Length: 462
Ligand SMILES: Cc1ncc(COP(=O)(O)O)c(C=O)c1O
Image 1 (cartoon, protein in one colour):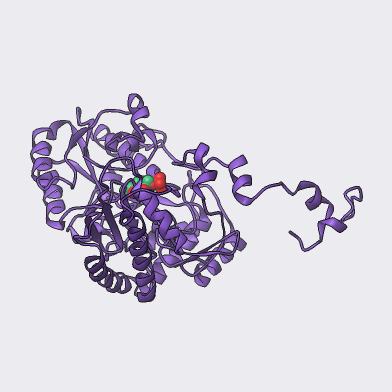
Image 2 (cartoon, helix red, strand yellow):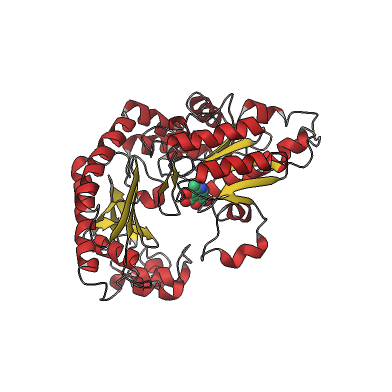
C-alpha cells in the first residue's frame, strides 16, 4: 500500500515502515472485506457477495473505476446525486481552498461566511419568495424539516386543527419516520408502518385523474391540512412516474385557494435534472417550502436544504427562547466544505450552460428510446422528463427479476445501472456527451436482448 514489499518487512522492527501493513493487511478480495464489515443500505447482506457488487476505487469524468481497474459509465449518477461528472477540477479546488480555511463550524446560533455566500447565490434562483435556507445533510431530513416547519407554522399563527398532511400515492420522500409516513409504503417499508403517522392520501401520477382527485380532497379537508407534499413533475423512486406541468400547477392553485401550504420535494428533480434548474419552474409553482438535496453539491458531499418562504419564516420570529422558535437542527447542517462545493457547483451550472446540455441530450435520448424500446416486446412503457428516465419492463410472469438481470447485463457491458423493481432507471450526469448517451442506450439494448430474448430464464446474475 505504501510501496514497500511486505515480504521484505520485519514485523518485529518498530522502525520498519512495512511492518504495519504486513501485520494489518486484511485477507480476502475487496468484496469479501467489504461484506465482512460494511452494512449496505437497501441491500440484503446475506446475498451481497453473490450479487457481484462493484467496489469502486476511483473515478474519471463520468466513469467509475473499480478495484480491478474496470470502467463503468455512471448512468445512475451515483444514485442521482452526480451532475457534472466525477473529479471536476473546479470543485476539487473549491473543496481544497475551503479545507484550508475551515471545514466545519456549527450553524446553531452562529454563521459561516461560505454558507452565507451559498444562500445568497441560491436565493435568486430558487422558486421561493423571499427564501430562507435551513441546511441539513440528507434529502429525507430536508423533508422532515419541512414537515415540522409546516406543522409549527400553523401553531405559531394560532390556527388550530391544521395538523395533517396530504401526500400522493406512489410518493417517496426518504427513509426517516416522518418522510416515510409521507411515502406510499410498499414492500420495503411495510414493516415500519406501525411507527408511521397517518396522512391523507390521494392517487399519484400513475392515475390520469390524480390532479382533479387531489384538488377535490384539498378542498374537502382544507381546515385540517397543514400542507400538501409532492414531487413536481416526476415521482422518481416509484419508477419515474410523470405528471404534466399543468396538472401540478392546478394542485398548487387548489392549495392557494384553500390556504394550505405547498411543499415541493425537489430532492431528485432539483439542480437541472428535468431541463430547468427546478421542476417547479416548469409547473409555474412557487412553493412555501422547497426541499433540496442530492445534486446540490454536484454529488460531492452530503448536503440538503429546506427552503422556506418569507411568509413561513416570518411566523417563527419572536422573543429569544420563546415558543415561536424552530427547535430543530443537525450537527453537520451547513457544513462549510459542502457549502463551498455547492457554491462553485452553482457557478459551473451557469457558466458551462449545463441546462442546454441537459435539453440537447434529453432530446437525443428521447429519439433513441423511441427507436429502440417503445413498443418492443418485454418493455411495457418508457417515461422521461429531461435526464430522468424509467424503462418499465414487462416480464411474462412475476419473480423473474428482469430489472436486476437487465441491469446486471448493462454492468457487464460497462454501464452502471440500478433498477427500481422492474423499472430500469437511466439518470446520467447532466454533462453526459452524445457518444455516452449512445453507449448507455446500446448497453441497455444488449442487456434487454439477453434477458428478454432468452424468454426470461437463465441465471439472475444480480
Ligand atoms: C423525492 C425524494 N425525496 C427525498 C429523498 C431522500 O433523499 P436522501 O436519500 O438523501 O435522504 C429521495 C431519495 O431518493 C427522493 O427521491
